Length: 96
Image (cartoon, rainbow, N blue to C red; front, side):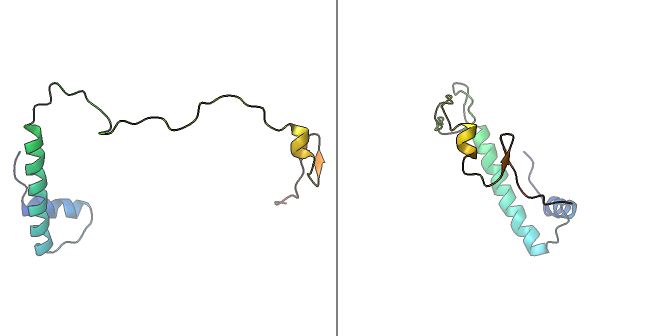
């Protein structure tokens, strides 16, 4: 992979509408070059026998099974409602 230059960093900063100084461009150029170099090292690894994964750690579902249960009835839900009609809560109108 080719090395990144100060002009590359300044160009990307310009595209992102970021104002950076020459010192910042120099600093980011060094940092990005190290990142690219590290990525190149990772590309040298032999991964032919390794299955692709989406996570490095095994994940499992921590949620309970979705099973139907008996919940309160409509009458139980409405029994303490101050105003109800036809099996529904009645609330004051908020819009005119």
